[in-house]
Length: 110
Image (cartoon, rainbow, N blue to C red; front, side, top):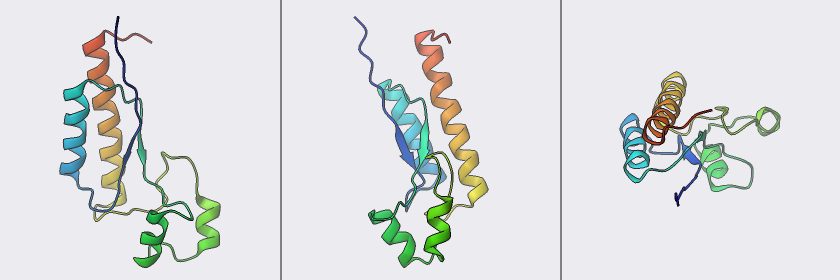
């Protein structure tokens, strides 16, 4: 019997750095989690992240922001000090890293 644990990971939260993203990837590998996607933390209205983004001035026009809210993989508001481009590169790297690791470890085939 094979035990599998699937989970989704949220990244790009306040305080997130390239180092903490790498630590998360290392953790995922060390415990053998299957993580098919690493999602962006989006500050949806009513959430603490939304309040944080408003306080920091990251959301200037609430109406426009709500219209732009898209899929979890979209970067609508960057809650970190890392550049948008840098975070998106790290997200792609992290997803590739964990899926590649899982495929190698479990001979996973499409």
